[in-house]
Length: 224
Image 1: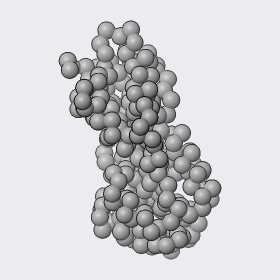
Image 2: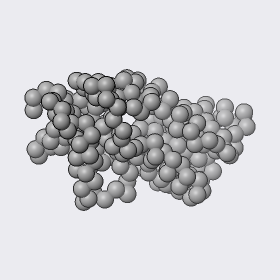
Image 3: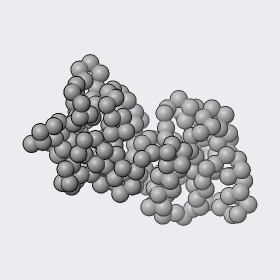
């Protein structure tokens, strides 16, 4: 899942980015409002965390830009201005949720996941053959054997599983699992695929992660 954070306080933005990345999200950060509406339109984000007091275009202007172009994109306002009147104005202005500052990162993460479930209804349990992914608890098992994954490994596996039986390109993986500063020349996707294979497929009679030559990767228990 890829999140855009628009926050002018660089320390707060870095704190949010680090915390959400540890939860497996890919996070892009902008520190002013001038580019935010355009970037939210150009990039396939799953949600936006938006401050209101921004250099350049205000958060409300950015919100209007987003709603004019992507009416269904979940937007959570995160602002120090959080009186009841300001919350009502934000929600009436098109925001899907509103949190005040200071905030608890765990609650922010939980609210983002709630917005993602609301905006794009998704199964909380994904299954591919004997592989099971509990997306609510972020737990993975195969044949009843628990598999411990690092955040990016989990994010990659969930993305593949949500596209089960459909090959996904390397660039599509990068877009949804890594952030905008990712070095597309590196082999990090391949490294993570190999790690997943070692943890999931090694010594198993049925291999689930396959390379589709000239395309990318697919997770499936069907012949490829």
